[in-house]
Structure formats: structure tokens, C-alpha cells
Amino acid sequence: MKLLSIIIAAVLGLIYGQYNYGFLFTSDICLFAGLTLIMPTLFKVKLTDITLIFEYKMLMLKGLVINYIILPAIAIGIGLLTNNFGVAAGLFLLSVLSGGGMVMHWIKRSHADTSIGFILLFINVTFVMLSLLMLHIFGLYTSEYFGESYASEVNISNFAKTVIYLLIIIPFIASRIIIFITPLKEFISSKQSYISNISIFLIVFYLFGLQSSQLLFELYDFEPELIYISFIAVILFYIAIFVLAKVAYNLDSPQEGAAFWHSVTRYITLALVISTFSISSFGVAMLVPIMFAYIIQIPFAILIDKYMFKAV
Image 1 (cartoon, rainbow, N blue to C red):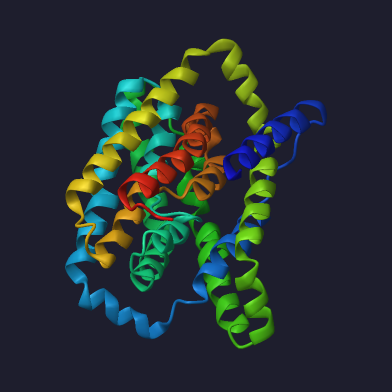
Image 2: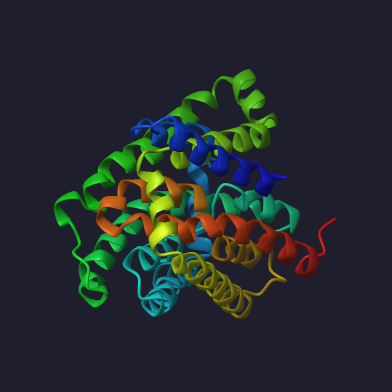
């Protein structure tokens, strides 16, 4: 149902943009995403939970190596094979954004350690700055390989401070305030799944309704092969993630189980938001693998949950 909702939102956004000139991009969408998707997940993050980082320091280190070194390296390898700068950039962006809006859902269903899950979620959100820096470095050092120019004057690094402010600082401060307003906190917590679904629908509709997203029609007209190339690349990437995570983590451990889900799932909605900043630097093809990630990741997570954790 969630996948169908996302597809409908994307289609409606493209249709709206095609017939109504599209939306103009505003960074307010980042604030909306931060308050509706990230802020509610921070309610259960306690400052005292920081001690878990030291208690499970080897697990944290393993997660960092997998999510910020090995997976980006895999994404670069697959991306270079696509021979398209935008597709490679989209795949790389997915590789440096760990977890996601639904990661706690899968952690709870598999009876993994939710405390570790929340700490990893918070760490990965705070590492968005690192993810943006890595994307910028990717653009600098791979553009020559693809025979493309990387517009450094408008690159993604210029938006890093704004993204961190809107996606991390404000949501965290808001979560600390709302914690003391018990009725509001309980209402948001009880309706979190509905808020998340509605928020993702609106974000996807808005982003696909942007004027810049209408370039996807031109991409389909002039380079239709990038559609199936992106699909194959994303499939290969998720297969590689699964194999690596299954080998790296002991799923009999609730703590390692939580880290496992933070590796096999990517923060797709955040990737879609960030990618809109960088179309002028990487090209509209960057959106295509992120679109396919929506179609692939949700069924992918359902199958893992069903056959590996036998959740009921």
C-alpha cells in the first residue's frame, strides 16, 4: 500500500508539473521533511543513550565502515559501469544515506534492539553533512571519467549548512521541546505512521512536480536506455548490500540486527530531497535510480522481514 501511494504521488506530481508549469523549488521542503519525518523519531533518543556508543563501539565502527566506506565503494563501481554521470551520482547518494524513515519499523518487527536503532538513526542523520561532502568529492573526482563538467559554483556542498540546519538542528530542538508537552508528544507518537505516510506522499508529489523534474520527460525521449540501465544498477546495488550485511552482521544478536537494518535500507526520501539541489550539477538522470529505489527497497525489506526474521 505504501509503495502504491508513492507511485501515485510521483505520477500525480509529474502530471501536475507537465500541465501547470511545475513548482519552484524551496528549501522549506527540507524543514517540512525534518519536522514530519525526522523529528518524531527523535522523541525516544535520550542524551544518556550516548553511552551505548561506547558500550557497542565495535558494532558502531563496523556500521560506519560498511555504510560510509564499503557501500560507497560498491556504488562507485556499479556507477562507473553505467557510463552516466547522473545515474552514478544518484546511486552514490543512496549509498551514503543509511537507514530511512521506515528503518525503525523493520527493527521493531524483527525484534532487534530499538535503543541501538534510535542511536544509529540519530548518528546517520547527523552524518548528513559527511554524506553531502562525500557526494561533492564524488562529483569532483569522477566528472572527468564521464566526460562531464561538475559545476562547482553550484554544487551540493553549498547547500550543506542549510540542509543540516533544517534536517537536524531544528528537528532536534523541536523534539526536545515537544517531549515536555506530553499530550502533543503522545498524539504525534500515536499517529506517527499516518504522519509519515502523508508526509512522504506530499514530499514525493512536490518533488516530482518541480519544474526541474519535468526534464525526466526529455530524458525518456532522448536517452530511454538510462531507464533500464538505472533499474539494473539499483537491483545490483541492493543485492550487494544484502549479501554484505548478511555476512557482516550476526542476526542472532538484537544489537547487530538493528545495525543490519541500517545497512540494508537507504534514506530514499532524504536522497530525493537532496538530489533536487544537485540536478544542475549532476543532471536530471540522478533522479532515476532514486525513483527505482522506492520501487525496489520496500518489497526488498518486506521479503527480508518475512523470510529471514519470520515476523508475524
